[in-house]
Length: 144
Image (cartoon, rainbow, N blue to C red; front, side, top):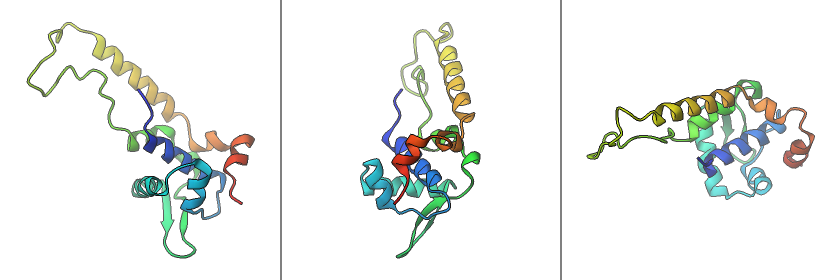
């Protein structure tokens, strides 16, 4: 399993907004600070807004900010919004071939339990926990 660039950028964007709470931040600030393509970031910002994590404002003084408090956004929610379901053991379901171990293999159950535990841990972590009392991160992400 590997975190996609979209999910990574989504979390960086949310952390940037959380560190700069109460201020409208601009896409180019996030792009520069997080070393991300503005075009790729625009797609991520669109998805974050569509999923209700941020609100955007167009125009000369436009930008983005959190749509709700950082303590109400969990890492698990963001992962589910940006990552496809994790098909660790699809056992060729829905294809012409069926797994020859189907009915006897316990691997799919073990993997499902592991994925459930993974998301349960992410669901317990809020955006606020990632940024609050994290001086090093705040120094890195604080807008000028």
